[in-house]
Length: 392
Ligand code: ATP
Ligand code: MG
Image (cartoon, rainbow, N blue to C red; front, side, top):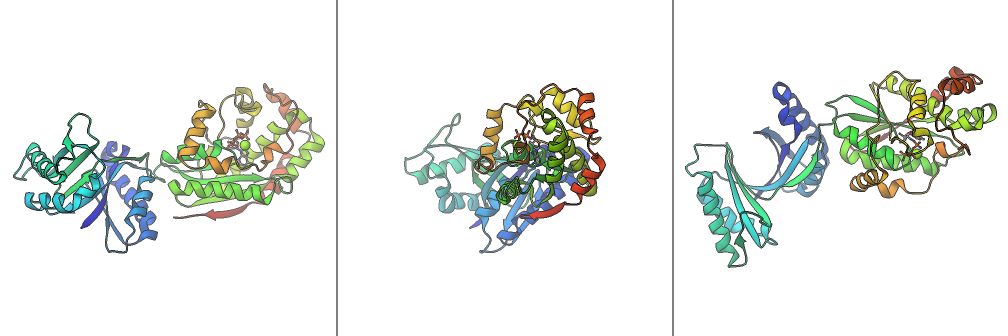
């Protein structure tokens, strides 16, 4: 039996003249991502990418999982490939396909012919396949065309026919890299991994930026962030995590500036350092997990104060989302359990007792003028180290 994975594109199919460029990109990504699981041939035809195992050792289960989590694919299924004639199709249904629909009590058959020269029409194919399934199920299954447990699909393509049970939703979005590269500010919390996921889904390749404050933050806090990046690689492929120490900045701010402004001042440093890192590594936007009003530093005025130190675009995909919605996504992408591990973040180290929720820019700048911004920024930037995480 020859099994094959069929992936349907999502938005790529709307891309008109550029479509083949996106298709190739998606194929290249799938090639890289399935490579650890064996030999697969990957090709596209008729709005579908085919992932075909080339030998017995190829791990089709893992290839299926990774393809389902590859941005650019909107629906996916496993199909049995068979010769393109009715006898072979019916024989395959009879001898190989029944286990695929074991659990279904009701079914319908949908046939699709992209080869219009095939001698039977789609309804005729459906009727014949349906009859064989009924016969083989010995009265345990019946047809329900409106609300079946499973829709059996028979597709007659140019070179072969495919039989499959249902179709699963895949992750959707655009192939990673088709929309440039961005720098995700990744803390150890719940929000930033979700923000990264959402922007990556739009086809953006991610680098990550993490600020540590050793010894105020622990080695384990950093490991947690790397673990979160690793979780994201399931969807994004390899991530370069850039780590900068802001310990000295925090200490100088603590010793020099008014406490109420600590967080804002630190965040302005983080934004400057992020922009500088972004430029050094070819990223054209910053991405944060900020959500309007969630904490004092995420009011409209506070965001204005932190945003004003950078020129590059800052994407905040969670800006209008409730915490519950964010948590739902973080569970779906499996970052939640890691995010809630109780290690401190540098933002929580010197948290002011009364942070400013409606800061005025001139007052922030007045506090900031008490320190040598450029020297502190340069010294912090010199601590940058890069860790490469995960699979291609
Ligand atoms: P998160 O759950 O992502 O930690 P949060 O609600 O705790 O977010 P803040 O701590 O105010 O919010 O941080 C807001 C955003 O700033 C984060 O989503 C992240 O993008 C960025 N950020 C915060 N701390 C760090 C850090 N130590 N390193 C890198 N980015 C950070
Ligand atoms: Mg945080």
